[in-house]
Length: 332
Image 1 (cartoon, helix red, strand yellow):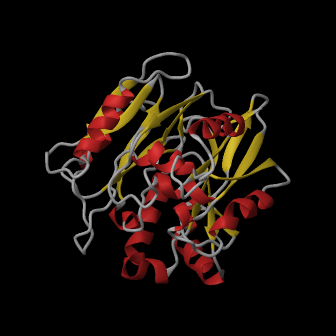
Image 2 (tube, rainbow, N blue to C red):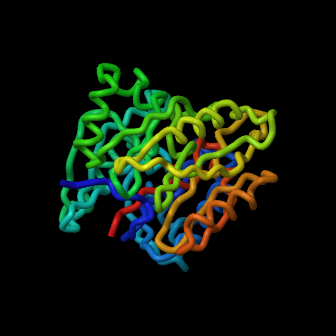
């Protein structure tokens, strides 16, 4: 039986994709690449496996990241959101690794980019000599799931019950499929996500587990925060939940970054809980908000064996996500 480990368990590698599509990022591409590089530099203690879309992108990535000595893989992709397009890497009790491939439909057919639906299979095929591959035909994105180390899975109704994913599935059917495919024991459902979230409420912008039964969520610091009511409901709902062991979750509220807008004045789904937990560091996205430093420091209290680092993600966020959204870890 394979299961999806908590992110703070040891990693062998982290999969990423080099941002190189000028037609997607336009004038923001240079800033996105700078943030990507600084994020990669903050990851410690695990290999970096980086997709490059063509020879030109590969040359650019190799020159920019040469001091980090990553592994490059020439696999075409639409965009960099590997949390949702790469396979989910599972472990068995005897420490074997499997790549779980699910269907991907562009976050409910909103963003259908060439090659994205094939990324999971192409990565799996690249690794097929070393790991087992399991395939599922139903739609599931890694960013819609958050698991702890005792078999608890957090998700949202807005995403997994959305008719733009698996319209014929009931809640009970999805729960059964999650338990069967990912080895989780209990599913906890939140309702809705952040405003203007392209992913329809992915959990990795709302609430994240930490060791020892903690769950990290956000609290609005001003009434003007456009997500104030949503964040309050999330915190209230989490306080009523118990994990797969029957233990009540311990809630840590950190600040919300507040109202973060792009150059056109459009609200972006900024979240401090879209952090990535590497073997030696927790890298927290920051947005030039008054609450950046406070959020980083508070998250750091719950990962005392790692260095917690804030890094700018405001340019990456213009594409719809932050650090957790662009990563996929491979457990050791």
